[in-house]
Image 1 (tube, rainbow over the protein chains, first blue to last red):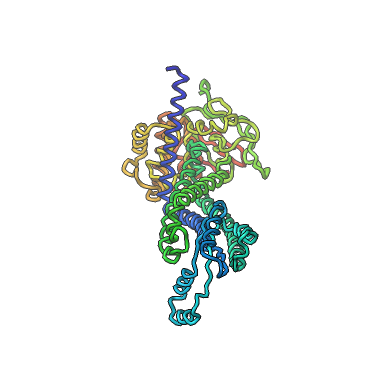
Image 2 (cartoon, each protein chain N blue to C red):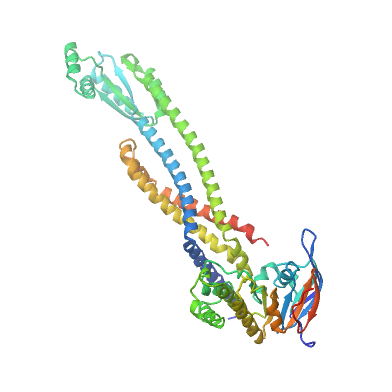
Length: 317
Length: 233
């Protein structure tokens, strides 16, 4: 082998050896600075926890509002003299608009009455009152569920201008529109509020973490001089602290995930049924990998960047 | 000695700090390999600054310091760590890494050089044995006495087999017994051919040595005697 070739291999070997040594060095620092590492990881954990929690709260509101909207339908009631066949015909026609309408369901007068009685908790007084009337006071209807909630306006407009317009007694849209508008408003307000609050938390978290790591590095400042004095290059001095930053990030991400899981476990029963995922645990599990890798990345980045910036001023000669 | 090339040479060196106070004024000094040189004088007289110019912690404002006849100020920043391996340093405050054991403190100097684990495991115990710490290799600095810490520091300074040992007040924090041990170790190192430069306040130490003494006063060399004693003006 030529001398030049040997040198390249030698240099590569040397770099790997030194990288491994700085890694070990970082791990040793992390372990031996027990108290300081504990404090730094705690602060970083708190930051990550706040960030992850605001994200989860945002997701929860989003899904809760979404599932509330999903439960909203529009029902079109027909005049009592319209025969059942005609209503079924109309239903089938509506069902053809698959782009806008997710489902159309026919509810006969008898069905309407029995579900009304069921909803009133089979109260004998109400049942008696209905019996007194002698005749079923309720109308037949079709219950429409739109693909997208914002399509109701178009669908209702179409029905009002259709050929069977004269058969229709009433459409309960106006009442629903109010609910939709309110839900939309809550959704957009919470989203904006969550975004502002979330960003503020992220900013504070970054600031706190950066300062904590700066203090950690500051407590080591005399060692940098010693290291350089005994022949360490700036990179060799810096690398262990970069690795230490990575360890902070990983440790904090693990602790955060554990704490979030505990929180999810206790919050879950309250949220039963309010979410499409069943409960909060379901939502947490669905986004688990996204959240875990997100905070892992955020934690490691925060640790590494803070360490690198903080150490720079001590390495300037 | 005239036929030998100096190991360190100061040529018209002046060092001025930002506040424009001259710490060193027009220093001319020649040190030959194998010398044991004591640098004496009151505090703030410029002893430490003179030493810093040798291990390139400071750069002269005027003039030049040569190491083996090469100008130190011309050394590339990147090559500074390599240059420093030629010079072992010992300080009053030991400058040990608090998170590392005696063994690890010494090993660190070899690790940064990219030396193999076998070399490190062979050489570090050997050098710690020379300074008399074979049984305390796994102790952390805070578990060692001042004298022992200074011996760890000396072992670290020796590990690269440097041509020059610079000791800046190495006995400043030590009791007389420990001081003597350190000075004896420095003499032993010197007897193997290593140049030793010792800055000190300790009159007793200097008087006993009977080696070259440079007395500094007001940023200048006031006296330079080949077999000197500590003097006060």
